[in-house]
Length: 150
Length: 150
Image 1 (cartoon, rainbow over the protein chains, first blue to last red):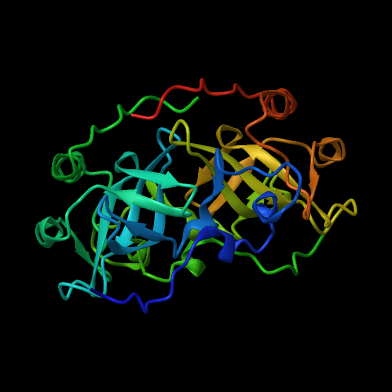
Image 2: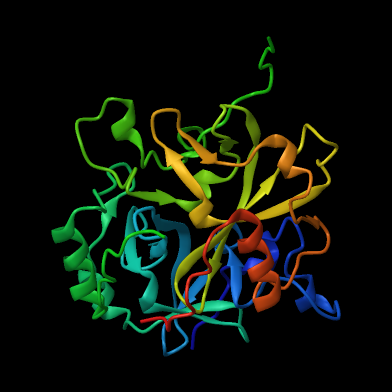
């Protein structure tokens, strides 16, 4: 049995504008959960399918070429000694659970030991196709086609 | 002749991780400008085609259904008495000018007077198709199809 003493964090706590006030009893309106403010997601917890906390979101990477949300940059700090590294996780590997206001990433904690990460001070060239493919191969996701922005 | 006394702001100033260090003389690497960190764009200046500052980015709205970047939420504060309102601008109406590290939005200042905005404390339901169409009609952009997330 473990005790969760770490502070939990979700997007309603970083909602400086109150865009999610509908969650708090307002009758209607607001963009969520279909549309979410990127800035409100920074710090949001990420759990796996077993309900284990994996880490939290540090950034959301936007592909300016396609207009797509490309990656969430996660920290898996707090276990495995992985606190010094960051991990780009394909956006389509993450799902938003509005009940718990957390993201789900279906990866076992053990398997994260081999996740492709990078040093906080040395971000990869995310436009590099080889790098992108290696990330998608690891998470079993498909790289969206580089369709033109319209 | 006018003097710009307002502080300019671009993504390198909000780059807490140094992801754009390649701009600052590092030899290579980093995600930008093809991929940009959503959080670093908050506060970034937006100009029009005449080089007039229109406002700045307050949020970036992600469409969780399609995985697309849907809107930038802008403040046009500082002129026209529009400081109290926010404006959702289609992401595909904005282009990133990496030379000036600013976003370009081709709208005349005068025309902004009739831009569809909302009160900071009352965000619209951005999943509403009628609302979305009204925004895209105003800016002359096309609503991306609601393709399934993959």
